[in-house]
Image (tube, rainbow, N blue to C red):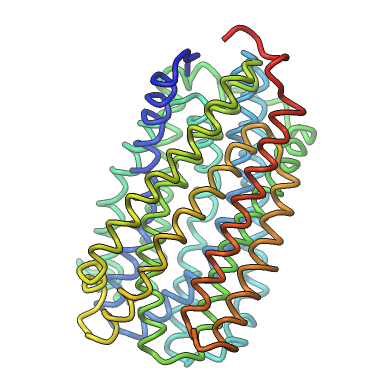
Length: 455
């Protein structure tokens, strides 16, 4: 990563970082897509089991990964300070933390998974698929969490293409393993939807192996000696990661669990409404990969500039990223609204589902703009390592505005399921406004231009 001087150079750098991150995110998203699509081709009960398994796993994974992704802003600031030994120490102890977190998740799964699935009252076949899908996925927890630490380190260096290449190589492996294990090809057992969990776990091990190989063999990664020698566990470094990472992880968890909760609440509606909502949400989630990718790039560049003491540049990057995300959200939202019937028909051939999905997609325009603003404002704050107030803002927005407003509008007005979309949009808009306000506050009072070095 290097210093930039003009708005054009800053925009170019964000795009250079952004595009590989976006492709990486889409590649990871495609694994869930392949699991869902191929399980649906196998049997509807397997599709339901995989969907339930994914709804349990996603909030847990995203929340805990949020903790480990704190390595990115911390390492970026250390790189900006040119403190390489501290970068190495943070990454090494991040890997230790990833192992500890993975162990906790596995133990919690052993103790709680059966009671949790039992409490959901799902039918036996779906219960069995969800359980075995998550059991298979658990084999990949260690490599997945370790990869997130190493990915954060690579991103902090401003090198995002290599991760993209690794994920692109992993996609065909995931697709082939899904085919083999779900349908029982080439002498392997026919596992149905549960095979998707095992296929994804195998893919995670491949991704980790390739990432370690890159860090060991290629510059500039090998310079940091991530896997050479050890001072033992440094609890102060783990504490530094947790101090930033826990609020980050909780914010991510509250957002994803809030969406999962809406899915559960919608179960009281008819099958057409549930199918249409899931289809619309899947489309929105796909488009969300763009602002979330911008946010990852934004955390790195802001953290780097803050570490280098160039606070004016950090501020410029912050607002450039926010405006870029909102503009792209506006464009993609308009495209989705304009082609909503064609997009909806990709998910279902039933006229009622297509009609209702296309109706829900009208809300996607306002939803996306609000979501883009809040996720990038939060990312810029992470670059400043300012996460505690952001955590409180997101907690209030998601659980005291999104859900209550959506529930009231959906159940006590004539809006029906539309009420949840309005509630989600209102909460995300409030989050975006207050997070942007917090960003302005810290830029003015904690990181003023006066303390900046030469730009």
